[in-house]
Length: 287
Image (cartoon, rainbow, N blue to C red; front, side):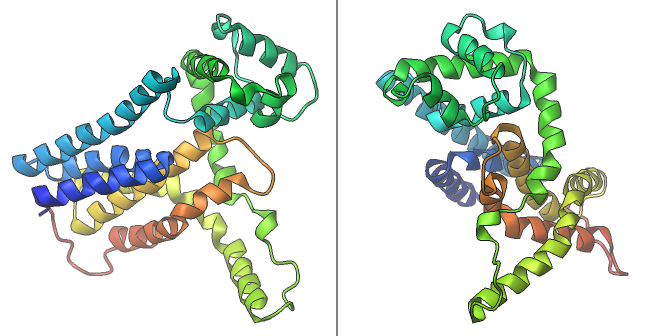
């Protein structure tokens, strides 16, 4: 069983991960509840897991508050709001609820009437080349995004779910080896890409396998299923985040971000087969 020291180490690792890459904040938010549920009958561990989660949540909240005090910007990072703007532009979410944010309401409305790329950086520069020097614009953008998402949440979630297959299957053309005879390394990389191209469709099973794993883990927990549920929840949290807030870009934006958890994706699928198919072995209860 994990000790208090283990949870302290986890807290610092989660905090370091967030500071290095804010998108990793979904991992502790998703996995610590799994640990809390797993050890729900052991009060000391349950309390440690809950306190670790609460302590970690204070990190991004404090980070955003420091930004607010220092520059007036109420978010974690501006690039995150630009990403969400890209999703609003490409999915054409209704923005009538954000009329109070006049600059972005009028520019988005105008942009939608033109046959221009929904790329958010190009959008920002199209209307104001000097916008990166104007913090008040990004403060307004943060509030504009939040208002649009809250009032168009069903459409936003629908786009997120339907976007999952593209996130999983997108190919980064910039990394493709075109000439396999360019050398030994090129040949090896080309072979790996060919193999991956054949098996990548298996990743489409991840959301469905994860649901099955979670149901069986809750109803009939075993050590194998607990480990699989923990890993699967971490993987799904990152997939859903990418599908929700990352806009399409040239060269395979999705795969660039998904590459961080690519090993965990395939490990989750392997563990799922192992934990769901006993093969005559005796399953060991964990609770």
